[in-house]
Image: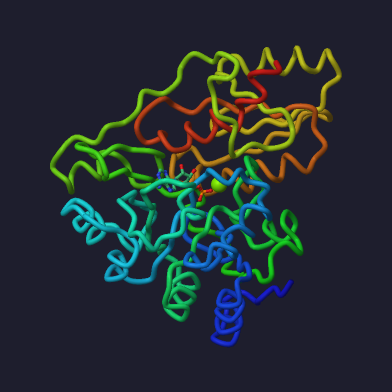
Length: 330
Ligand code: AMP
Ligand code: MG
C-alpha cells in the first residue's frame, strides 16, 4: 500500500487515478469521513470494496462525482428538487437518491434501480474526482459496521493492505457521514440524518421532508448495529452516570466515559473523555474519540446521552446504532 503525504500533490493524485483505472482501491478524504473508492463503472473493482470491508453485497454505495453536469451520466428522470439541492449544497455533505441510468452497475446500487450521488467538499477528493473524470463509488473506509475513519491513520490501521493507496488529507472537517435524501418518491424522504438538517432541505424545497420515526423501543433486533466500537458501549442519561459508575466499579470494571457535560474526574479505573457541548463540534470529534476509547482495553464505554433536539439528530442516530449491541447484551 502507498500512503501519500498530507496535501496530496499532483503526482499522488495521478498515481491514484492510475490505480482506479486499473480497477484498484484508493482511500481518500472527504469532508464527512474517509471513503474507500473504486471506479463506479467497473463492477469487478466495486466488488473489491465489499470484500475489503466484509460488507454484504446488497448494501448500496454512494457514487461520488466532481461536477454537477455529471449527474445525468448516472441518474435519469432527475427532478427539479435534485437540481435545487445540488445548486445549494454541492459540493457538500448531502447524497441524493435518484433513478439510475441503465449503465450504472447493479454491484454499485446493491441490485436496486436507484443510485445515491454526491459531490464531496474536500480539495483532495475534488482533485481526485476531476483528474479521474468518472464516478467513484465509495463507502466509508472501515470494516462493516465499525466506526467510520476520520483520519488517514484510521484507514491504514483498519484496512491495511486491502487498500492499494491512501490519500492523506488530514482530519475530516464534518466527521459524520452525509445526509441522504431519497428523491424518487412523491415526497422527499430523509434516509440518513447528517450535517445538513431536514429543516435546511425544506427551506430549499419549500415542501415537507419525510423523516422516519425513530425507534424508541430498544427491543432486541429492532436496532441496526452500525458505527460501533468493539468495546461494549451504552448510552446513559447524565443524571444516572454517577450511579452507573459506582455499580460498575463494584464489579471491578474498567470504564470509559464519553461526556460533554458530565463533570466527573478520572479515577484509576475510570477514563473520562470530554467532547464539545455543541452538536457539530461533537460530531466532528466523535469517531476519533470512540476509536481512542476502543484502544484502551476497557470493559465498557458509557456515553452521556446528548439532548434530544433537532441539532443533535445526526449525532443521536450514530450513538443509537453504535450502542445497539451493548443494549442487547446488557
Ligand atoms: P456508507 O457510504 O458506508 O456511509 O453507506 C452508504 C449508505 O447510502 C448506505 O448505507 C445506504 O443506506 C445509502 N444508499 C446508497 N445508495 C442508496 C440507494 N440507491 N438507495 C437507498 N439508500 C442508498
Ligand atoms: Mg459506513
